Structure formats: C-alpha cells, structure tokens
Amino acid sequence: MEAQACEPHFQDSLTLPGEEDIRVYRCSWGWCVKRGEAAGRSRFLDEAFELALGRRLEGPAVRALVEMLDRELTARRDAAGRTAATTVDLPA
Picture 1 (cartoon, rainbow, N blue to C red):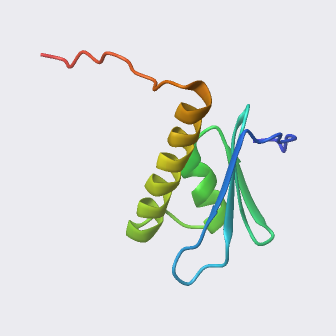
Picture 2: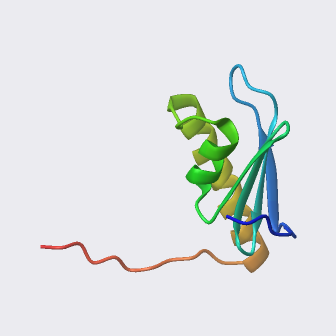
C-alpha cells in the first residue's frame, strides 16, 4: 500500500514480549502499525501488524490485538452513544 497521510481517529500502543513498543493507528483508509522504524500499512489490521513485525501473528500478539480492538470498539461506542449491530444469517 502506498504511504498515505494518517489523521487517526483511534490510536493505541501495546507491548509484546520481547518487542519494543508498538503503536497502532486507525485512519480513514485503514491501519498503520509502527514498531521502531518499521511500519506496516494496510486496510487489514492483521496484515499491517505482520508487515510491521516482519512475521506472522502468534498467540500473545493475537491476544494483544483482540484487547486493542476491544478498546477501539469501546471508544467508538462511547463516542456514538450506541453499539453497532447487524444480523447474520448462517448458511443451512
């Protein structure tokens, strides 16, 4: 993905065992994940993480990712004053 300006509407940081601080930004075009000088940019959060880390996500990284997503969703709910919901029809 071509580098684009990021005016984040959500940002957070997290630390994984054995890693330096990881900064995560949610922008209008997708996600930006920065680890030191390395950065991953993608429409998909997991892909941006993998680009910044230089490896596939594993247990502790996935857990940290889910916790961070929970914080973002909570922030969006608090800002909107309501939760998002949708109906999902499972195939028979």
